[in-house]
Image (cartoon, rainbow, N blue to C red; front, side, top):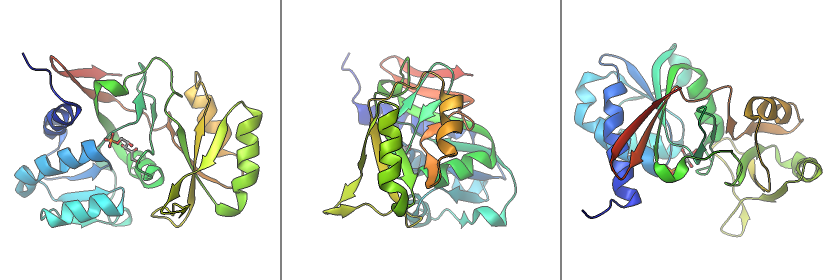
Length: 226
Ligand code: 5RP
């Protein structure tokens, strides 16, 4: 049998996530290429939901183009479920996120939701977080000091660039990508970095971890509950 491509695995888990969407409710929607597959699938059941709260301008544009109403997070209360991808997920449901630069709004919508359902292809499953460069959204005037703070813990931070200039997030801030970290205690690490002045959001999602991961594998969707 021909093995599935990474893109096909993303389609598979994007469609599988529909089972977690609660009819008559507003769904939290993440960002990224896997979530784009979910948004496309969500469009097929759009008449059964009220709409979505989105974690990025990119996801908002895709949702609206498909006729799915998008609500401001402040207009709605707690959401039943938040569906999003990850750059890495470990055996406890802790994740690294932010490869798509949307980590701050992703964490906000995740915090507003009762259940985080992570959708990912199997390449994202890791023993220990940190092989993927950790995204950290920062206030630009703190960049150099924060780079030194990461260096003191053995990391190498670089400013994410776009078209020759620092990438500007949806929130008007910059991003660091930090390599060389081995994040064996994600809860403690997230709490520690969150306290550094100038950090807007660290891309470790431990306090907002996944409760379920739908992992796309060669043999189908593997459901992991944490
Ligand atoms: C965006 C994210 C994404 O969920 C993460 O980067 C995974 O993206 P993809 O589904 O494209 O692999 O955190 O900020």
